[in-house]
Length: 470
Image (cartoon, rainbow, N blue to C red; front, side):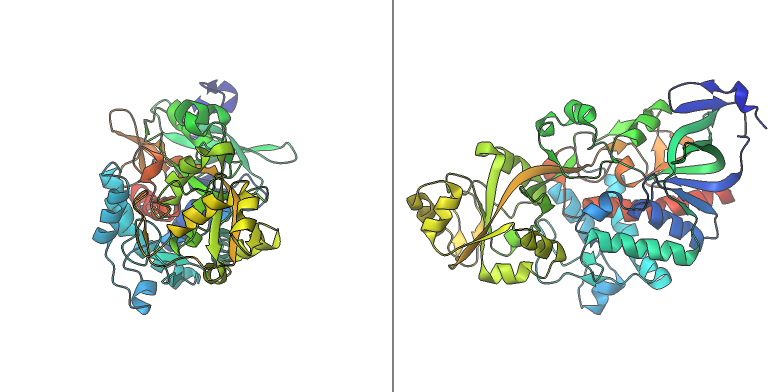
C-alpha cells in the first residue's frame, strides 16, 4: 500500500500515488447524489456491485430538485398503459431535429435507447410511479413522452429516488465534500479524499469512479468564458454547479465538448424567483414586452426563449393567458406556489393590462387582435384560438438553468481524452458530461437534462459493472 505522506500533488485537487490508495475500498464511488448518481447507484445495486454515493449537500437535491421533474422517455411501460406509441428512433429524431443535427450522434442513440429501460427499472424494482403528461406536447416532441411522478415536481422526483435508495440500502453519504481525486502514475483513479462538516477528513479507495456531480452554470468565471451572453442573466440553477467536475476531468486529461450548450428558460418569475411552466405558452399563452408587443414564436422552446426575453427592454416580459389556461396551469404544484406568492396578476380589460406593462392601451389591443386562429404573419406561430377576458399576467425574465456541455464521453459514458481514447476507469454522466443539445441554447429539447442524468447514470452503471467483472 502507498504511504500517503509520499503523495505528489499535481493540482490542488488531483493527486498522484504510486499504486493502490491506503484506505478502505469500495468497488465504485459515485460523486453526486442527484438523479444521475442515485439512478447509477440503484442500477449497480441491482447488478450486485457495491457502490457508495457521495453528496456534498445535507440532502440529495441538485439540479433535479429545481427542475420540473419531467423526464422524456420512449417505449416505456407507462406509455403503453396510456396507449401511446413511441420508439427510441422517433425520440432520437426529435432530439436531432431540435439540435439541428448537431447533437452527439452516439449519445443521442445511446440515451434514446437506454432511457426507457432505465425508467421501467426504477418503476419495477424501486417503486417509482410514472405518469405520462398527455394533455399537451412540449416543444420539439412529436409524441407524449414526458414522464412525471405524482407530485409533478423535481423535488418530488428526488424524494422518491432517495426513498428508493434508502429502501435498497444504497450507501449515501451526505455532507461529504470531495476535495481530492487520487490517481496512480498510469492514470487510473485510485480513490478520493472527503471533507466532513466538522473538519475531519477521510479517504476512500475505489476501482471505478463516476462523476455525476455538476455542470458549471454556478461559476461566473466559467459562464463568462463559455456562454458570455448569459454572464449577467439570473442563474436559476443549483449553487453546487461550480464546474468542479469539468475542472477535475481536464486535470485528469479529459477532453471537453459542447461547452457553449446550455438550458435557458424564458419564464422565470420576478421578483418571486420561481419557474413558471412553459405549458402556459403551449396551451395558448403569449409573451408581451413592456411595449405591449409579442416578439417571438413562444412555441419554439423555453430554452432559446431566455435570450428572446433578455433582449427585450429591461430584460423583462409578461406571460399573458386567460382563465382556461389558468385552470390548466393550476394542475402544476410549482405554478400553484407561484400564484400563492403573488406572481399572477388578474386584469379585467386592455386598459388594466396596458397599465401593468406601462404601455399604450392601443398597443395591447393591436397585439391581442392578432392572436386569432391561424398563422401569425410576424412570428410564424400557429394559434388555435383567441384569448378571452379576463386575462392574467406574470412578470418574467430569462434565466440560465444548467449547462449542457462538459466532459467528452463515449456511448458507455467513459470519459475520453482529446484523442478519443477512454481514460482507464473514469465515467461521467448528467451535468458533468456533454449532453445531447448540440452546441447552443436552441438545441435544448425539453427534458434533455434529466434524460442525460437518468439514461447516463443507467448506462454508466452497466458499463462499470462490466468493467469490474472483466
